[in-house]
Amino acid sequence: MNQHDADNDDKLARTTDRFSVGLTGGIGSGKTTVANMFAERGAAVIDTDAIAHQLTAANGVAIAPIVSEFGSAFIDASGAMDRAKMRAHIFSDASAKRRLESILHPLIRAETASAAELAEGLYLIFVVPLLIESGNWRERVKRILVVDCDEQIQLQRVMQRNALSQSQVRAIMATQATRQQRLEAADDVITNDSGPAALMPQIEQLHALYQALSRSI
Picture 1: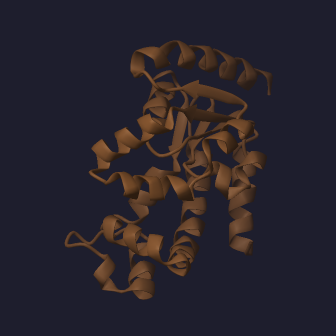
Picture 2: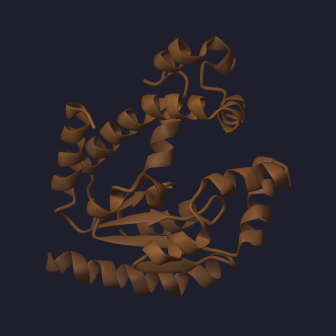
Picture 3: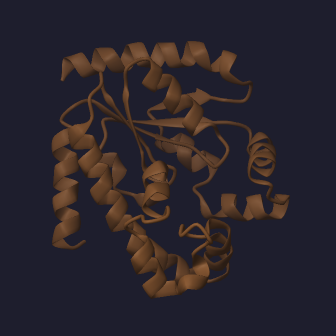
């Protein structure tokens, strides 16, 4: 880790003197839905995937280094990163994946730290799709919350949402932590097999817990 990354980690550590939760789950598990429900109840939500989208949107900070590293063929007509093309490229080339991560991860870390410093809310929720895989979020947050669902449901949701084939979705799932690995790392689990109505009591229970824990810090 370079000094800039270390400074951003220090910045995150200072903000997470407040009560903070790392929210994660496999693709299609419903992380955004769950995060939005916590936000409605007063939590400050910082979504690292949304930050990544902003960085790779037209005129985003990551566009110039992506063009420099990969060429303009990976930029679409709007000036944003062509996510489908880049996804296909990095799945077929592990070194390309590492090169993209070396561009994006420091930028995401910096933006996440800045957002956390400015965040106002009852407590902080960091939405991190690859929280388990990244290895260092355990030290940054007070609790890890996993959104869990049956893998067949995951598969169906992502195929429908992203218009991907079953083999494409399975390839994405294969790059992520397993369901068991996520559950083993979890302090708290929300089951999302049945839709928003079944989520409500689970959210209410954890929101009450997180408020109480926040007040105790």
